[in-house]
Image (tube, rainbow, N blue to C red):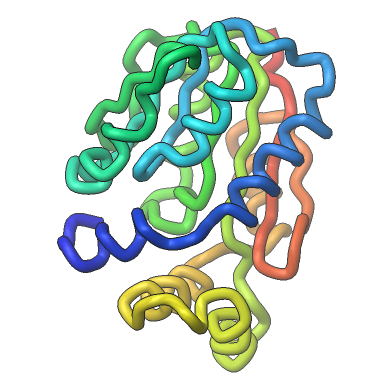
Length: 210
């Protein structure tokens, strides 16, 4: 996402409900996590989730990567704050293999449906995750029809700029269903759970085997 209008609309949109859901899912899946280690956020956008994660778990070293420098620029003023974990944003595309097998937590939200090859996400997780790493993937869930997609857009983004509504609609149609993501996970040999977690989201989570 590089268009100025798209980036501005996305960065200013209210994703607090979805971001809060991501945090709840992580805490529910990994109640034992105490906020230590290196955290990698794939497709971090303007860094909203990574900022909240750093605030809730001070002491971590956090890296967010995204393929859009314009999107990262929107977040730079907000993710680096006093009394939080160390947070860095970096422009990189998947597959991302820097510092392989050294990340204790890998997060990603609403990235999977943007990838031409979904295998790039799962392969990056495999290559970057430390043994026993915690993984939380959340993404949009493809509705049963174009009409259902339009209804979701109206329900959740009806007051947003038209460019954001259009992006949401096309993203819903490009997203996967639960069984499709489960098949992707099986093909990569990962041991992750995957379920529908809202009327427009699915999630996959688990630990990477040592």
